[in-house]
Amino acid sequence: MDGVTAIANILRIEGVEFIGCVPYQPLLEAAAIAGIRPIVFRQECTGIHMVDGYSRVTNGKRMGVFMMQNGPGAENGFGGVAQAFSESVPILLLPAGMPRDKRGVHPNFYPTRSYETITKWSEEMNIVERIPDLMRRAFTKLRTGRPGPVLLEIPADVATAELPEELFNYEPPRVVLQQADPADVSRAVKVLLAADRPIIHAGQGVLYAEATPELIEIAEFLQAPVMTTLPGKSGFPETHPLSLGSGGPSTTAMANKYLKGSDLVFGVGCSFTKTNFAQPIPQGKTIVHLTNDEDAIGREFKMEYAMLGDAKLVLRQLLDELKSQAGSARAKDQALQDDIKSVKEAWLAQWMPKLTSDDVPMNPYRVIWDLMHTVDLDNTIITHESGSAREYMSPFWEARAPRSFIGWGKSTQLGYSLGLVMGAKLAAPEKLCINVMGDLAFSTVGMDVETAVRCGIPTLTIIINNAYMSIYSDSRFPVAIEKYNIKGLSGEFSEVAQAMGAYTEKITAPAGIIPAIKRGIAETEAGKAVVLEFITKDEGEYSKF
Image (cartoon, rainbow, N blue to C red):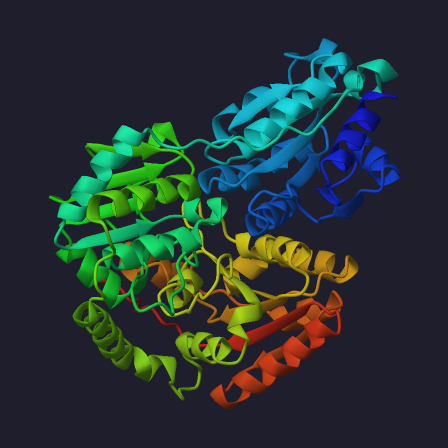
């Protein structure tokens, strides 16, 4: 068999059912022959975002795979890979490359070298005989430790070279997980039990480890309130009486109060990296850190109590040690739970005028609020866009189950949500899958709505169209706004989506929100991609403290 046939057969052994692409790439035909469905996108980044969403929702148990055309295809995919790298998402990238005798000859693009800084591992299939070993290594990297993109370049001459049948000996590598050093667990338990006001800070490592049950048990044992990071949102049920909601650029009053008032912060499956999209950890806190990434330990905080390992396994170790040292769980702290509830009710009351506003043009908060109270939250996956859509949604949306909310925010590319939700729908076809985006984001990637239509991926896209970049303060460029109207953005987006074959509506008044959402849901259930465009006011107030 030739090189690409060997690769396609290995992907099939690994259970890959589809592969994202923008042709032409010789692996495309080999994959189709092997029974792997090619999904062709309008642009590489959106296709990479799609396989990213797929890997997220499956927690990497079924891997998203994207192949790129030699040269411009591999060049165009850079942004999508950078986004996945910043978000720690495991995806396999298979760019076509130049023949080996052209390596280093200008202007040939060399993906292996160019992608080294935004992948967990970047390697070239330098000889056809190494394909099984390199693919095994790639899947081992994808399944081990901190997740991230892995790239294997396929040189043109290796793609067509012949691999002897006897050298095709591929077996999928098993998942290898690790527990923490028992001494580290014992030290962490002592300080956790000694804390008067501990708070749990849960990241997306909880989601990848599928450690929500253990996290709930730890929180209830300690009677410790739980806030999540933005990527970790949905890792702890926000219906739980100890839930504080998620942190981030916008946050909840509960997370703000209890993080500031804590004496110990227990980070589970997070990095504690200081970014613009993470709620700052106040100075003077004792920090306990559980992570599977040794590079995150002590990165930006002095770390005396660190545990290295899989979140699920280490939480089980902690539970055993807590029972050993404390004997029994703490009694239910009704005063704590009542206070969390009271703070939440007061905070929501402050925001209710916006969340239930009858203004025309509509307030975007009303769109989000009505959407949340119309869908079946137990059977919905939703993701936000970068910018204002993220700020409107993340504090107020109630995430009840793991991966019901796909939170993100580091590289924050415009348009990321469209590909994410397509991947989510492929991973969980029984769910209603929604993305909420602004007008600028839709104008960036909206042509790939046609991909959802053509490929039968019935997602629901909500466009919040205020024809204005609300997330950017006018004070940053007043002359440019006044003289050149740089924030004036508009377009007939529902008409564009309709022309591409989607079911569309344009909604201009609050009374139309819920009926349109119900019609949109019905159309997705009938197998159609749906785009609902809501004409809203410019709303620049966010839940910040």
